[in-house]
Image 1 (cartoon, rainbow, N blue to C red):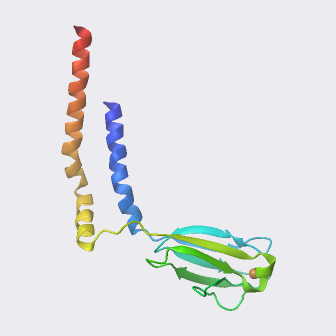
Image 2 (tube, rainbow, N blue to C red):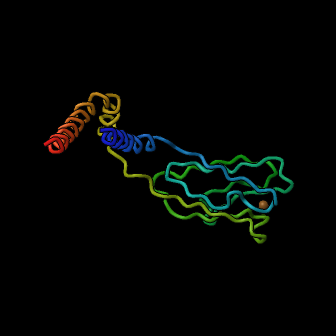
Image 3 (cartoon, helix red, strand yellow):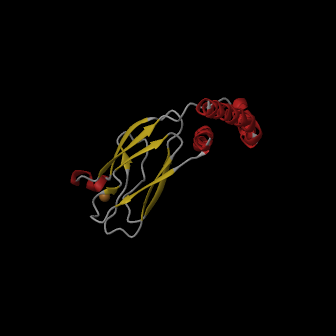
Length: 163
Ligand SMILES: [Cu+2]
């Protein structure tokens, strides 16, 4: 019984999690580490729709972040930079970038953009969102059916043991 309940709640969470993630748009911050000559982190993996923010302030040296194919460019090297770039849908791929003044010293980085999870058509999404609010009503019947089956099974086992 307890196991069935646990399994049911795990399944429920499994159903809800992808929906929650779909609406999230994350921001990943890349800064400069204490050596003054490295991006930190120098390699990140994001998902389409996410924003990468190059952020540092009060640096000893001026830095920038320029993508190899000029996909993004934070501009002139500066000690204070706050530059954001959002990877829109369809931009999945690998992006190499450098700090121009320090590229030769190894101040380089890489951003891997993974495809966004398959999107549901707008109509379907709305329906799904509606269903989430009605989730308790929708899932309770199936939950009780499952529990009833478990109870029947348990009593059959008990019956056999008794006889
Ligand atoms: Cu630099």
